[in-house]
Image 1 (cartoon, one colour):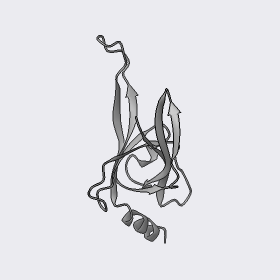
Image 2 (cartoon, helix red, strand yellow):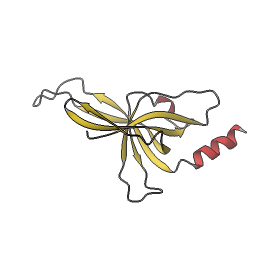
Image 3 (cartoon, helix red, strand yellow):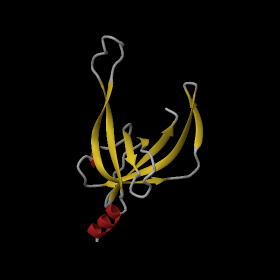
Image 4 (cartoon, rainbow, N blue to C red):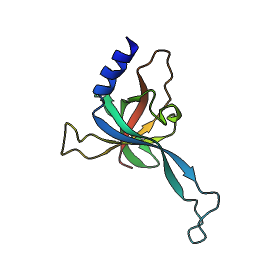
Length: 131
Protein backbone atom coordinates (compact mmCIF):
# COMPACT_ATOMS: atom_id res chain seq x y z
CA UNK A 1 0.00 0.00 0.00
CA UNK A 2 2.81 2.42 0.86
CA UNK A 3 4.54 1.73 -2.46
CA UNK A 4 1.36 2.73 -4.30
CA UNK A 5 1.09 5.95 -2.29
CA UNK A 6 4.74 6.75 -3.00
CA UNK A 7 4.28 6.23 -6.76
CA UNK A 8 1.22 8.50 -6.71
CA UNK A 9 3.08 11.21 -4.80
CA UNK A 10 6.06 11.04 -7.13
CA UNK A 11 3.79 11.15 -10.19
CA UNK A 12 2.69 14.62 -9.03
CA UNK A 13 6.31 15.77 -8.84
CA UNK A 14 6.52 17.29 -12.30
CA UNK A 15 8.87 20.15 -11.42
CA UNK A 16 12.65 19.97 -11.11
CA UNK A 17 14.74 21.49 -8.34
CA UNK A 18 18.22 21.80 -6.90
CA UNK A 19 18.60 22.12 -3.12
CA UNK A 20 21.96 23.57 -2.10
CA UNK A 21 23.95 24.16 1.07
CA UNK A 22 25.92 27.41 1.34
CA UNK A 23 29.58 26.75 2.12
CA UNK A 24 31.69 29.72 3.17
CA UNK A 25 35.34 29.79 2.20
CA UNK A 26 37.82 29.30 5.04
CA UNK A 27 39.91 32.30 4.06
CA UNK A 28 38.83 35.72 2.80
CA UNK A 29 39.54 36.78 -0.76
CA UNK A 30 42.87 38.71 -0.73
CA UNK A 31 41.46 41.46 -2.97
CA UNK A 32 38.01 42.01 -1.43
CA UNK A 33 38.76 40.74 2.12
CA UNK A 34 35.40 38.96 2.01
CA UNK A 35 34.68 35.27 2.33
CA UNK A 36 33.20 33.75 -0.80
CA UNK A 37 30.12 31.56 -0.55
CA UNK A 38 29.67 28.56 -2.80
CA UNK A 39 26.35 26.74 -3.14
CA UNK A 40 26.98 22.98 -3.06
CA UNK A 41 24.08 20.84 -4.37
CA UNK A 42 22.70 18.33 -1.86
CA UNK A 43 19.68 17.17 -3.88
CA UNK A 44 18.71 17.63 -7.52
CA UNK A 45 15.81 15.97 -9.26
CA UNK A 46 12.03 15.88 -9.35
CA UNK A 47 9.92 17.89 -6.94
CA UNK A 48 6.52 19.49 -6.44
CA UNK A 49 6.27 23.13 -5.43
CA UNK A 50 3.06 24.00 -3.56
CA UNK A 51 2.09 27.47 -2.39
CA UNK A 52 1.06 27.08 1.26
CA UNK A 53 -0.92 30.28 1.20
CA UNK A 54 -1.53 32.98 -1.34
CA UNK A 55 -1.14 35.89 1.07
CA UNK A 56 2.23 37.49 0.53
CA UNK A 57 3.68 39.64 3.27
CA UNK A 58 5.93 42.66 2.83
CA UNK A 59 8.91 43.00 5.13
CA UNK A 60 11.87 45.30 5.38
CA UNK A 61 15.36 43.97 5.98
CA UNK A 62 18.41 46.18 6.08
CA UNK A 63 16.46 49.02 4.51
CA UNK A 64 15.26 46.95 1.55
CA UNK A 65 11.64 46.03 0.83
CA UNK A 66 11.05 42.28 0.40
CA UNK A 67 8.01 40.16 -0.29
CA UNK A 68 7.77 36.79 1.49
CA UNK A 69 5.31 34.00 0.75
CA UNK A 70 5.15 30.64 2.54
CA UNK A 71 5.16 27.43 0.51
CA UNK A 72 6.13 23.77 0.58
CA UNK A 73 8.68 21.88 -1.49
CA UNK A 74 8.01 18.15 -1.82
CA UNK A 75 10.76 15.77 -2.86
CA UNK A 76 10.93 11.95 -2.92
CA UNK A 77 11.61 10.71 0.59
CA UNK A 78 14.04 8.01 -0.53
CA UNK A 79 15.92 9.94 -3.22
CA UNK A 80 19.69 10.38 -2.81
CA UNK A 81 20.36 13.57 -0.82
CA UNK A 82 16.74 13.96 0.27
CA UNK A 83 17.44 13.24 3.94
CA UNK A 84 20.19 15.89 4.01
CA UNK A 85 17.83 18.71 2.98
CA UNK A 86 16.98 21.02 5.84
CA UNK A 87 16.89 24.43 7.42
CA UNK A 88 19.12 27.12 5.99
CA UNK A 89 19.41 25.62 2.52
CA UNK A 90 18.37 27.28 -0.72
CA UNK A 91 16.35 25.61 -3.48
CA UNK A 92 15.95 26.68 -7.08
CA UNK A 93 12.73 25.31 -8.57
CA UNK A 94 12.03 25.06 -12.30
CA UNK A 95 8.28 25.14 -12.89
CA UNK A 96 8.56 24.59 -16.63
CA UNK A 97 6.49 21.41 -16.89
CA UNK A 98 3.13 23.16 -16.72
CA UNK A 99 4.21 26.77 -17.25
CA UNK A 100 6.80 27.05 -19.99
CA UNK A 101 7.06 30.83 -19.53
CA UNK A 102 7.85 30.75 -15.82
CA UNK A 103 11.20 31.76 -14.43
CA UNK A 104 13.01 29.68 -11.80
CA UNK A 105 11.79 30.27 -8.24
CA UNK A 106 14.34 30.58 -5.44
CA UNK A 107 13.18 29.57 -1.99
CA UNK A 108 14.79 29.31 1.44
CA UNK A 109 14.22 26.07 3.35
CA UNK A 110 12.98 26.96 6.84
CA UNK A 111 12.96 23.46 8.39
CA UNK A 112 13.53 19.80 7.62
CA UNK A 113 10.86 17.11 7.45
CA UNK A 114 10.99 13.64 8.96
CA UNK A 115 7.89 11.52 9.48
CA UNK A 116 7.08 7.85 9.92
CA UNK A 117 5.46 6.38 6.79
CA UNK A 118 6.08 9.56 4.76
CA UNK A 119 5.84 9.13 0.99
CA UNK A 120 7.44 12.51 0.29
CA UNK A 121 9.68 14.89 2.20
CA UNK A 122 7.64 18.09 2.65
CA UNK A 123 10.04 20.95 3.30
CA UNK A 124 8.55 24.25 4.49
CA UNK A 125 10.05 27.04 2.42
CA UNK A 126 9.75 30.80 1.98
CA UNK A 127 9.81 32.35 -1.43
CA UNK A 128 11.68 35.61 -1.14
CA UNK A 129 11.80 38.29 -3.80
CA UNK A 130 13.71 41.54 -3.79
CA UNK A 131 17.17 40.16 -2.96
